[in-house]
Length: 212
Image 1: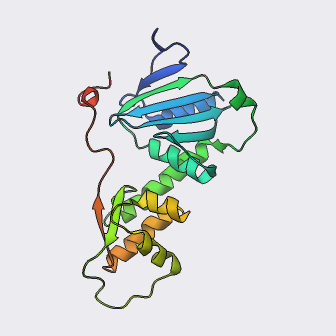
Image 2: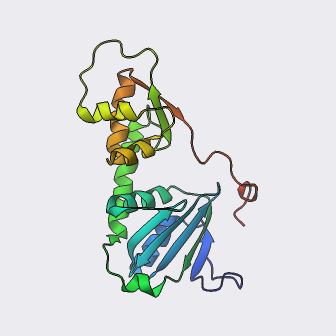
Image 3: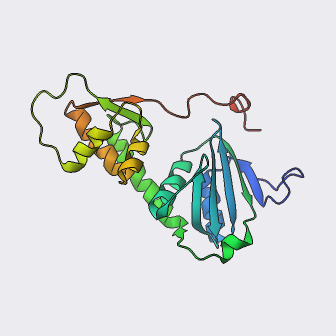
């Protein structure tokens, strides 16, 4: 973590994700009850912004898409915690944002939820490698008739071979891990297969060997 350079006027702090974990940055802002916008870019060209007011998360966006509601904001921040290469900077926030009233989320609760989700993703990982896994209908189908819950039928309907698990959860308005769990069972029943098409596939040239 370093002081801002002369080219990044207004930046409060900045640094490399290889040197400082984003969880540590968030905890620092939480402990200091800081207000600002945490701007993050990773080694693959993705960008995100997290607004904090008095050390609490107010809103978040990733790749230009603003998270809607507390659950989506929390999910975006948790996703960012997995970014291990790239840059971050904390910039001043618009005073209007500070004055505006709105719900906020404690950093500690986000980090606790991230740890819980990490355990759950590890359990699901044998069939669903992550939120960017793409389910599709199996050509052979299941070996025997299977009784499915309504939410599992819904997952089958959204399994178009194009939408990943995160997109399916957004379309269904359901919890990401709940959808991933349904995909996990349906793969086990032979009704779905999963391919992995991660967004983080090819790093930018400037990030192949260094963040600098």
